[in-house]
Length: 238
Image 1 (cartoon, rainbow, N blue to C red):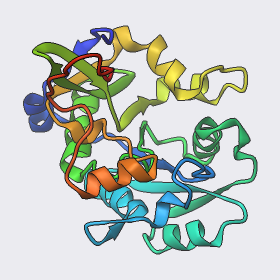
Image 2: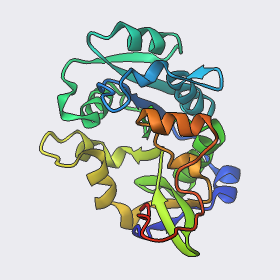
Image 3: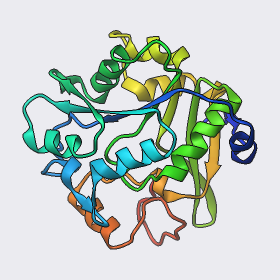
Image 4: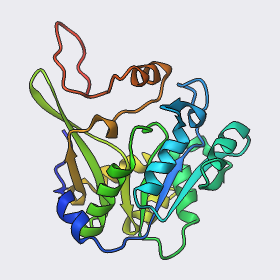
């Protein structure tokens, strides 16, 4: 189970939230080895993954959207340019997505107050989800806001942290620290106690489309981490 943190009230947050300057950041410089082809250009309901994620962040209230692309991949670069987002080139993505986040932080103007971090894998996230999380971030003034999907296995309540994650400026230095081990996930763990958690029953925030099998399942309408009943020795998902 996740740490409890503080519970965000989406209704009040949206009603009273003042302005919070936020930049959406999409890491797209990975090799997509598990998928076997660039995820950016994959289509879902007529839109590419990269277009869906950019639309979710832009229409969800982000002032700007940055896509971090690899240096020599024309297919990803073309798909990203088509969205109208700002492109950043990651010349050294070997350490993982945290390198893209650091590059984005280095490129931010001083007046940016938060980052909405949304990997390509979470292409089912839409604008209302982003808008709710930004409303909570603004009203709560928490350093971290994340969705927490609730579901059950054999009637036992489960929960799983999802995306996007909203990182306030107070965490930028920690995220950008080259000595950080474990990437953004480690920062999330460090700050769970002070995070605002949006509890929601919405498997889209935790559906990670990272393999051809997961892609085919989503196209077929099958979602990850939904209420389920296991039988025999079937392994339970956590």
